[in-house]
Length: 462
Image: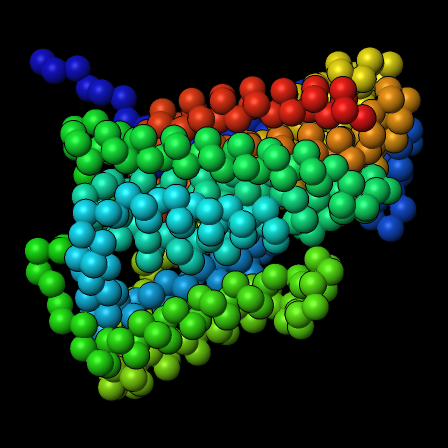
């Protein structure tokens, strides 16, 4: 009798197991809190508070509370799904993908560095991360049709943008918020971050291109199998790129360009361009309107547009649920009153360390903190007011503390199951988490080692 093989649980099960572990931690870790001024913790004010352990009911409710907290992102994901459903119904994407692959004439591999640099620039300048969710259903089929696997499509977006986020040069949502709490300008330490960006983005591109080349030569070396996932686009049945489909593709591209422009905070970056200041509510409306316009261009009936849009939303409903559940982990930590305790332990570990030991400990501390609090802006608000002042006593600049924080936060978000973008992207590509981990851990290890070297160099140069 054949032995049953272990199968990796789904993303939902993994996240619920993490919820259970966090709930158990609230029974074991002492509850505590800092004093807060305008929502910012004050260093040296940590004190014990009444324990509030989380039970079975709290675990179940945490997932729903997380969904409420992330409802703007979830609605955005659904609207993207509806928009893509209408566009796919027109056949424009199939025809466009076939045209792109045919036009490249065997040079598809160059899409990898070009697109990764594009996403990397978005990540380093304005923290392009949640917004990348809109690109996975678009680009995964392109790489599948080119003879790669879904992992290559996911990597181009996730690792491209992720490398940029790790080295956030002027990212106002990570570096900007952290620098503000640390009392330094956004420009301090930027030279080190720019060099780090070039090295990290180059390493990520080399990693993905090497894997893609292996899969192209020998499909059996794919970690998931070529063509895995229902987003496959068949190049063997090409659709004609008619004038109407060209107009649909033009509207399709315009919607994404508007999205990118609308979320970039040009004013906070000091650029002389009008900032729209849009976020998920406005972006959701953009994709809703875009879907209706595409349907009208394709001369669909009103009922057909509505049905197709709703069906497209349903395709991404699982991704929206994953995002909500992942937010529940932070909800449990805060309700269990252990977030500040964990931060206080880090504060005690850092006190009295030498400069090099201090900055390396800061980086190591932020790795588990980023796992528990995947929001970079939320983590910066909670921790930088505590950690940055300690750096002054150790002879470490606040700017380098900011670099350590964002490097750890960005690195962990490439691989952690608590990151909604990671789990959502894997769900879209139908790639299990264990296979993604098996694929990406070597790059993560390399980037971790490089970060340690950069931080030590930052101490020597300061």
